Amino acid sequence: MKLRTTVQRVRVGRDEYRVVTAAPRTPGAVLYDDSWSLQMVVDRPAAAGLAAAWALAARSPRSLIHLPLRATAGPADPFAPDRLDLVLLHHSLGFPPSRWKAVRGRLRTGRPHTADIPDSDFPAEDAIDHRRRGFAGWRDELRFASAARTLFLTGSATAFRWTGAWIRSLSTEAPAALTRYPPGSHYCVTLRHESTDPYRTAKGTPGLLHIEYTSKR
Image 1 (tube, one colour):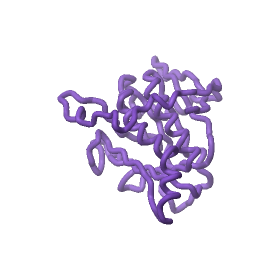
Image 2: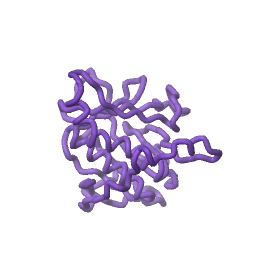
Image 3: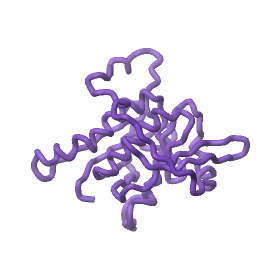
């Protein structure tokens, strides 16, 4: 998995943050809040980039992985919901989403870097022990938050690797699956805040993210 990025450090007050911003690959990803849930549509190149970003988040506990989707989604439909950017981050960073607007305002060109991550970073589906979710003290879940027209997904390396295995299938399995099945068939991945099914998180962010593969973008 490869992902072209820029890397820079941004200081806000006494704190410094390392921000890894994915360089635009295609206009093939759109993320928005439809008021009931979070909806994302990706084509194959965008799906591959999304999987690489998930893997990078698992490997980079001290970084904010920033996907500027609003800038790469093409002309906006004035009647469509507002589009959102995406930030992935490790929970140990303790980054408050309310600070993101200040961090984003200080982003500049950055240093170009290509992340090259082996596919083996993601486990096979049959290697994931979902029974562990029921153990006392289990913390390896994704948590949703939003601020400044940006969705934040926060979790552990395990959370990103486990859910990343599903994200990767959008580029590795979805194209063939849609070819085998009749027109109008559907391939998607659904992620939930802390693996539950809340309509909203405690702070009002939709608790469900539906990511659909499309070959038509």
